Image (cartoon, rainbow, N blue to C red; front, side):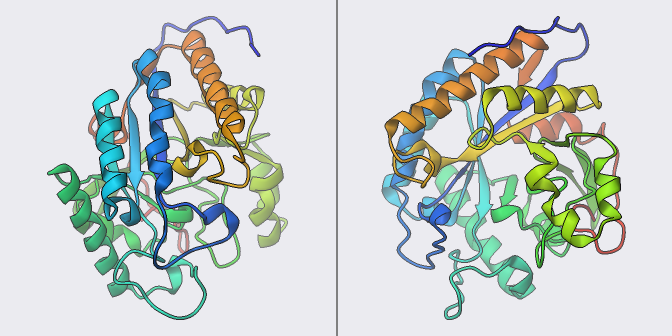
Length: 329
């Protein structure tokens, strides 16, 4: 499965950030356990090590509380860090990070959680993360892309300097509104603290499509991501679609590529769409083929989220949101 590379540009390199959400199993089956979640999938991260090592690429692992709280998972993280260049970031699953709210459905959106409870959950998460690696965690991703504008001050106080929770062209009933978010990184000033937002690489099939859909109402906006936009999620898109997403993003001025998936998708049987080892191997081959195509097509520099923040935060524009938008402050 190959695509002929385009001529390599002499322009400044694209920056590539590979990240995984490292978390408990069960989410893809609709289960959101408050207690007793299993994290056996973390040991399967080692399948990724040769792919990264051979290409001299770092990776950012956004780890949930359930991972930091499990001794075997922490040992697996340590083994993986010995094999690759790894940044450990924080990933908030607010449904099972202490203090846990009992009763009701297993999952509630972040907008339904009182702000003081969310801040307490963030303190718990960042404390166990700091205990694991002996240094503060400064990169963050919110579970289910559920970043709300009221979270920004909480993240700044928690020490976050790079956030990767925004999915452009994404909105839905009761969820955050990221529809108009830029597709390339931008800085955000929150109470005197400057953060970098590093969105998921996501682009519409046609440049005018988001504006046209906006006039069709909230229902149409909420469905655009399913039929009119492509996101760089290798589990869901074939190799050629990933190449098309990237070509469109770069042609429209994008200079950062954000590629992400989940640790449970590295484990045979860890998700319904990863039923066996063959499915995992197909995913890894697809990712490897994409990375080889990317580096043959453009100059590429692999960076962690933290490195991206240190390099870009002083240089990119500071954005402010329209009233009601959740993607920036």
